[in-house]
Image (cartoon, rainbow, N blue to C red):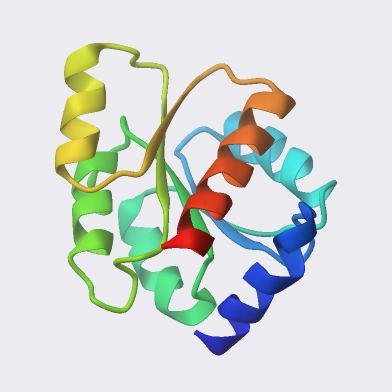
Amino acid sequence: MIENHNNAQQRAGGTLSGLRIMLIDDSRTIRRSAETMLNSEGCEVITANDGFEALALIHRHEPDLIFVDIMMPRLDGYQTCAIIKNNSRFRRVPVIMLTSKDGLFDKARGRIVGSDHYLTKPFTRDELLSAVREQLSISEVA
């Protein structure tokens, strides 16, 4: 994870260049639009269709930040987040729940499984990038 620490140092000036982000969502449209927005800021984006695929990719790519949709087939976002946060290697990686569900219960359940932030779909480019920057500044301080 030394490389990830160096990426955090490079971003001290606010740039997202070199940041490795994993995006887990069963919607191709959401994956493509978020990937485009993040790529335009210099991020490397790893996409997964669901939690099972993401768990297979996470060890290979060691993301700096993870977006995970809540409503997915097979392994939902809550389960995926809990598995990631229970792994000592990835416990400190910020996880942002990405969903169209905006209820208080959903947000609370996300916090219970270890999510660091909550972004409601549909989201704007500014909302997406703001969530990334907020989590980076928090994780760099921790």
